[in-house]
Length: 264
Ligand SMILES: Nc1ncnc2c1ncn2[C@@H]1O[C@H](COP(=O)(O)OP(=O)(O)OP(=O)(O)O)[C@@H](O)[C@H]1O
Ligand SMILES: [Mg+2]
Image 1 (tube, rainbow, N blue to C red):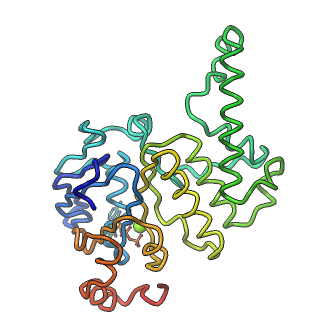
Image 2 (tube, rainbow, N blue to C red):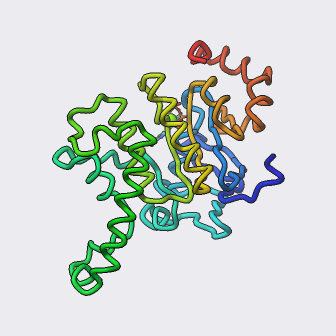
């Protein structure tokens, strides 16, 4: 599959050292455009660190990161964000005094109305954009199963629904690449499927690319197009869900680490 798909993101021999610890060790991988890529691996294997490198929070000790053909190694988080890489749950900013609909609209990127002069002199364009934002927000709320709360406030939501709202805010930014670090952790099974069905929808209708860290192997198997597995900082396995999840090396690592197989 990977050979047939254009890459949107590529890491080339990327490493990140913390003192003597190699949190990320010489990782080279590609993420294909308009696909859902899963990232698995036992605790401490470097998954979040890899996302921190991609999103510009850390600069690699060595190696390059290429996004849409542009070398973004060492770029600041706001620069990376502006290029279209949005990391959900990094800024879990839900505004409790705004309705859900307003929470989403407020999260949208490039709102013309942010500039008072634009709002006055370009009223028609402003109104058109407002309308598009509302339509997008309504669509996202619907996909997340939150339509009935559109005009209500976040304090009425469960913890899991708040996570869905955060995902909705990330989607409002119209990311090209959405990085999700365990969005389903602590979320009930029904809401987990909402999360994955929503990103699947935006992959299919808008060409969204998703790179997602997820511990539950059954969920990864159902929704991802390709899986990378990290272990001890290194890229350990790579393949289709069927290939990776039937690989004996996966089971032996998880058994050795005493982790999370029972969640699958
Ligand atoms: N800021 C830091 N300073 C020092 N060591 C760190 C730092 N961040 C992560 N590490 C270490 O780097 C290694 C990889 O951590 P990381 O958080 O990337 O793993 P992970 O795969 O996301 O694990 P988990 O599944 O538990 O979230 C771990 O040994 C961790 O202790
Ligand atoms: Mg992590």
